[in-house]
Length: 326
Image (cartoon, rainbow, N blue to C red; front, side):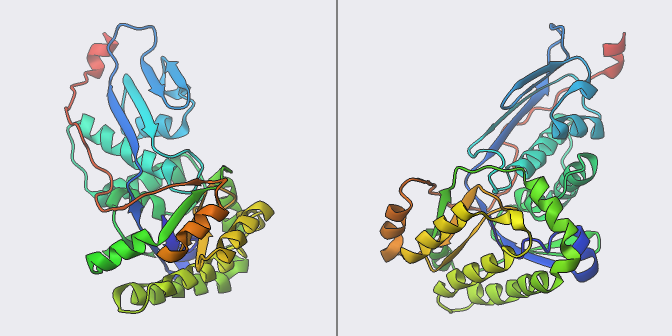
């Protein structure tokens, strides 16, 4: 869940100007199970997601992240099952969470431990280089590390700094943020590609969005009313709308204005834009009004989480490539 600085995590921007974002992970999960497929079948790999793929060669796998991750880590004869709490292409980093979880599972299957930094870097390499998908770096980092963080980008590296605030204040922030599903889905890489092409024309906007990160961190870590967080969300959304025509639409703008008229002090569309989830900051005494105003859209309760990707069941499996070739 990206709050501020989105767009400055694109390499085309931060490698020259630096970049910063503030984001948090929430208790909605992508779950990946990986094991070696027994050698009883005509196919040697099975991948189950919204469809089921059964193939003999890794190169024949249609899912680009699975195919490229298996080749990258030299994985063979796998049964991979994927489930998620949230729909794909919805703006909450499901594809990057899947990439991080898949790589984490692959390493575990090999009996190897890798730290969060390497998982994030590997997932970025998988999605941005091997799969050639446009976009920023923040989703992979957030999924790997977990928690409410400030992430700074410079050169080819990043730094993750937890935002330390009192538990009561963090709980208040969580409880005053309302999440709604618009029902619209989109391919974020397409929108991200448009943003990347416009970086040179959007430098003023991106620098202002980057500067907001310092101001928001000051608000979160001080005694300033969190109501200001909502106003700043509204401001960064107005800035973000100017990055590309595809970020918003008339139906989304209408929903946003309806929520504001009903008591939301601010909000934003999450992810690259175009659809997915709308997030609003709403004081508790106005939350019923907002829910009533958006009653035709699914309200999603959630809580912040701090763990990031984790292995919940572990058993390394031996794989003998030579045995397979005999």
